[in-house]
Amino acid sequence: MNSLSPELYWTSATAVMTSVMWAPHILQRIIEMKPYKAFRDPRHDEPTLAPFAQRAIRAHTNAVENLVVFGLLAIIIHLTNAGDSLTAQAALVYFVARAAHYVIYVTAVPWMRTPVYLVSWACQIVLGGRLLGWW
Image (cartoon, rainbow, N blue to C red; front, side):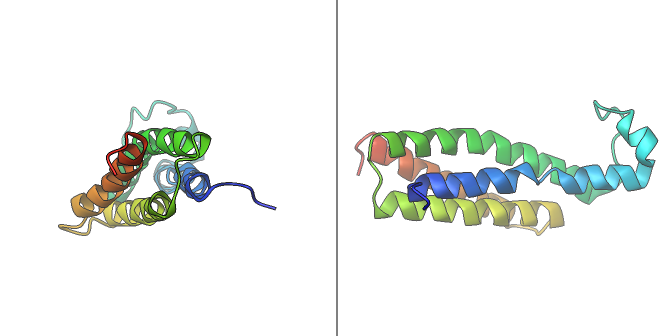
C-alpha cells in the first residue's frame, strides 16, 4: 500500500518526470555527433545544432532548480502534517504545470512558457504560505 501523502506522491512523480527530461537532448547529440564523439564530450563543449535539444536541456535545468524548492516544501508539509486539500491540489497542479512547461519550452510555443511557469511557482507559494501560516 502506498503511504505517501499527496504532496510527496506528486513530488515523487515530478522527480521521476524530471529525471528523464534530459533524454531528448542527449539523443539528439548522439544522432548529430554519432555515439563516439558524443560520449567523448562530457562537458558539452560542442553544442548541439538542434534548437529543440538546446531548449530541452534548459527546460530540464529549470525543472531541477525548481524541484529542489518544491520538494523541500513538500517534505516539510509531510513531516509537519500541515497538508490538506489545498496543498494536495497544489502538488498535483505543480506536476501538471511542470510537464506543460517542459513541452511548451521544448516545442517553443510562444507566449505560454512564462504563464505556465508562474502557475508552478504559485504552487510553491501555496505550500510555503501554508507552512508559514499565511492561510
